Every structure is written in C-alpha cells, then in structure tokens.
Length: 638
Image (cartoon, rainbow, N blue to C red; front, side, top):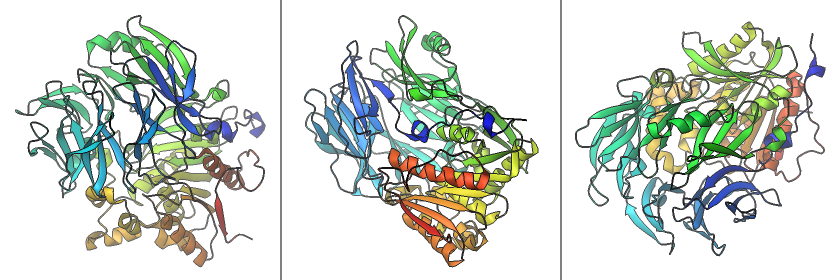
C-alpha cells in the first residue's frame, strides 16, 4: 500500500504561485516587434519588448509595486498600451508607452475613474476608443483617444442603461448592449456614429447571460452574436441588421461557444471553440483549416490564438495542458511551421505534475455536473484527504489545463475536485438558470453531491474534505461551515461575501446597470418576497453554527466584496465564542496580485490544511513571507 513517502518531492510555493518568468506575448501589428510580461530586477511584472530577429530585449514600463498584467499594442505599432489600478481598487487607467522615446503617460488621468479599452481598428492606427465613467461613476461613456496628442473627445454618451458598446469597422460606435428592467438583455443599433440608437433585438432573463454582440461584419450590415435564442446552448450566429435574417455559424449541444476567433481586418468569423471537458475548435473559414490542423500537432495541450500581425503571416499561439506550463509558439502561415518561443514557468518542466481528468457527476435532482478531478502522483487514489475548490463568479467556470492550485493540492497529498455547479457558465442556459435564487440551496447541494460522489467512488475520505475558494467560492466556503456545519473538516475563504444584502448595498457604482442581474439570479434585496431568501442564504446570520476551523483572507481595497464582508463574520464568530484566523492585506483588492501576498496567504492555507487534513507542508521561516503586508487576527485561539 502506498504512503505519503511515495509522493514526489515538494514543489515550492514560489514556483507555483510566484511570478511567471514570462507570459502573454503579443506581436505588434506591423509584425516587427514582440512584447510580453516578465519580472524586472525587483520581481515586479513589467512589459518587455524586442525587435524580431534581434537579440536585444528591454523593459519599457516601470510600475513601482503591483505589477502589470494587461497590455495591448496600438494599431500604429509605435505605442504600447497597458492598464493599471491602485492597490487593487479596479479603477484602471490606460497608460501609453511611446517606444521611440520611452515616455510613459497616463492617458486617462482621472481620480476615481475606471477606464476600459473599447475598440481599435487597423484602418485608424492613431485612434483608440475608450470607455470612462468620468461624467457619472455608474455609467461608461465612449471617448475617442488621439494617441498623437493624448486628447480625449466624447464620442457616445451613455443614456443610463448601457453595459457594453460595439464599434463597426469604421470605428463608429453602432451597437449598445443593455440590461432590461426584467433581467433580460437588449441590443440597440444605429446607422452611423452620429445618428440615434433604435431598439433592435431583445431577449428575456433566461437568455441574458448567453447572449451578446461580438462584432460587425465588414460591410457593417450584420452583427455577429453569441446567442441561445431557440436553443439551449450559446451558438455563434450572424444576423442582418435590416431584415433580421440569421445564419448559424457554429453550435454544440454539449457546451456554449467558449471563444470566437474573428479576423481583425475582414471581420470574418474563422473558428469557434467549445469546451465541455477539454476544448475543441470548429473551423468556419476554410482558409485556416490547414493551419489549425497543423497547430494541433505542435503540442498535446489545448490551444488558443493569442494575436497576429496585420499581414496575417504570423500568429502567436498559447497551449495549456494539465501537467506543464503554458507554452507559446510563433506560427508561420506561409511555411506552415511553428517555432517554440517559451513557457510561462520553466521550473515546472520535469516535475511530477498530476493529471486533471474531466468527470461527470449526477446531482440529487438528476442534473449533470461537469467537474475536474486531480489526484496525487505516486499514491493509491483511495480514501485521500480532499480539497473541494470552488470557482468564483458564480457566473464563470472551471476549465481543463494547468492550474497551480490543483497541482499544489495534489503535490501536498490531497485529491482536488473542481465542480461546475449549477449557475456556472459554459453548459447552456437551462443549467445557468437552474441556479436562479439558489444561493446556499441547490448551488450548495451540488457541491455536497460532488463530494459524496468522490467518497462513493473511493477517492476521498469523507471525514477529511476541505472547501477552498475565492469570491463566490469564498461565499461557498462560508456557506459550507454554516449550512452544513458537520460535513467539511475545514474551510478557506478568500474575499467571500458573508451577507448578501450588504454585498449588494456596496457594489461598485458602475455595477448599478447590472444590478437587475443580481435581483434575478440571487434575489432582490429590496423585494419583501425575497428578503427571507436573502437572509437565509447569508452565512453571517448562521455564524453561531460554525464548528470547524476557518481561515479568511481579504484585500482592504476590494471594490466588489468590501472588507466589511469579512470583518462582520469574524466579529460574529468572536461574539459567539468561535474560532477563526483572519488575514488582511492592506494593499490588495479582489484577490492577491502581489506575489509576496499571494505566497504568504497560501503558506498560511497550506499549514491550515495540513493541521486539519494531514497533508504535507513546505516550511515557512518567520511569521510571514518577506515583503508581504499581512495583518493577522486570531479569534478564539490560545
């Protein structure tokens, strides 16, 4: 019989959760340069650039603390754009780097304002459309940004309910997506950038999260849509604006369209990805069929096209696989040849990583749950301690591929189960809508049923199961210990809400147009009929039921789940004489972006899981990781 001694060597948290060595490469539109993200000498993520064919590479940004994770090339290939917020407050600004002189400037320099890049087009190389909530913090208007002068000019004003904008190939904002008062979604259109919007297409609440405008056709006469109208799963369709005639481009009965590859110049839909378990592509454009077939043979992972040059000669391709780092290749379309570039974390190569297996689980009401099971390497998969890892959202999903948390748990000796519970995206509107007003109820039951499945199959020891999650996953961890206090051995909550009423009362102002989505799917906190539902689904009011160990992590600047959400349940546990470990990071938001803080919290979580489940631990020197800003409160511990 295998024992813990049969597990492979410990993989350090630094390798699993530290900064990648390099990631996210993007070609400049003119094809002469490549940019990517990598740490500088102070281990802060910056944007780096090199001229293709030359060996020199240089860092072109100088973020002082938090690190850059989002960037894009301007269409002129002279300016590199990147996004950054302040200590996790999510009020992102758009910065521009002039590669000729190295100057960096804040292109949206407004305090307390959030900026988003809305559109660009190769035909307008010196212009970018950005959305800003300057005029009204709840609403995003579209501005035209001149990259030569930095001038911002109002382009399209938000009438009060628009949550998304789509520009046509002439860089004119011609479609607006809204949420309707009933919780549905609607698209308005107009004929050019100065005319009045008119109603065009509307769907009810059942289709709202599987519906949206993606792009205009080259002639501006049709819209490419993600749509579940007339079917359960979200398909990709093209619909004429004038006559409403619709053509089905790609669909799957198993899963929603997951990613859509659209040619940036011709605006033709070229391929659509579906991921019921692992991902597969349906090629629409015959001109790329040979490319996709050959790319699929480069690597055994699932691939995506990261970007391409304007000549469409070179593509950058990313492969994700369960047992290795993300691998990047350059694909030469003329030669039909792939050139390996780099992997995001070379130190993962050669390590004994674990398989992630797609599995299907039946919920108690017969609904099929798609999940992913990761088992430790080297030990018999029988009666293992297990970590149930719950994704955030909840309108999001788990996917197959490299997951540092799944590998971490497996390496420490735990089975790891990730479940796409009802309400998760990707599996059709019926599955999504089965979660309406089921927070703490059927959504929680799905997690319990998945754990019972793992125990019944013999993988998991039912007395040694932990629940671990962030955001909605953090809520699920709190719900686990309050609604089913004897089921889990312990729980780890990162930035999870404890009271759904106060969660909604403190959402960011720019979420107000989307408030109706929460009313429809979670329950309306202002509706007396839903008041009891909201109260019953809030872990805060059952804090006295918590019997098992709990670890909570929170960012002080979180705009989505405020610091008070963690602190009020910590106070309630303290009032009831319970126990909880609470860690606050003053320079973080909705999750822990700085590697020092991320590694610090995970070191605490690792020791916590080992104490309660018996897994392995990588020792930590001192009370916290150097550079971390952790502030710790221990309640009920001697």
